[in-house]
Structures are given as C-alpha cells and as structure tokens.
Image 1 (cartoon, rainbow, N blue to C red):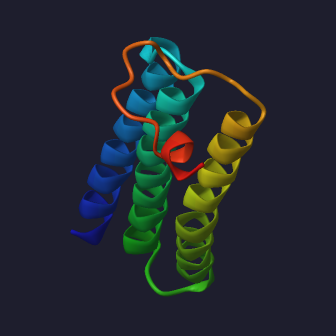
Image 2: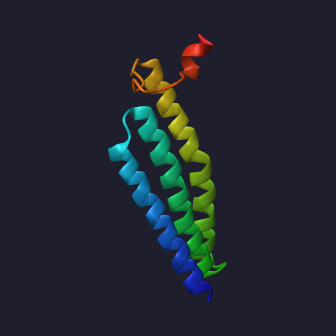
Length: 107
C-alpha cells in the first residue's frame, strides 16, 4: 500500500515539475518565470522526494530524501528571491502588463 501511495505522489510531483517547465516557456518576463518555475519545481521535487520517502520507508534512502526536502524547501525560495532582486537591481524591466513594483516603491 505504501508503494502505491509513494508512486502516486511521485507522479504528482513529476506533473508539478512539468508545469514549472511549461511556465518557463509561457510566462512573459524573468520575474514571472522565476516565480512560476520556483514554486512548481520546489513543490514537484519535494513531492517526488516525499514519494521516495513513503515508498522506501525510514531507512537510509528515506532519510536522505527527507534531508533533501528540507534543503530544497529552504534554499529554492531564497535563491529565487536573490535572483529576482539581482535582476531588478541590474535594471531588467518588468513586463509591461505588471501591476505593481514593490521594489521601486521602496526607493
């Protein structure tokens, strides 16, 4: 039973990763692409690792998957924030359809 649940969560995670990749192609500017892909790929990768944890149990493989989930959950949003802040500071413009620029309001 836990193998089936693990496989189901892995498939859901793979779909989230696919949606993140589609977001890289479809979204209009670097900020939207970064936001869309980071959320989908973080959730997708963590779901795949969670499926591995559920499928393999609390052995060495499961603990490595758990450690990777924690690492990705902390580093991916931090890296996305740093990349978007650096892009904004270097003058990369927002999409013309953007409604608000919070960084510009802080100046």
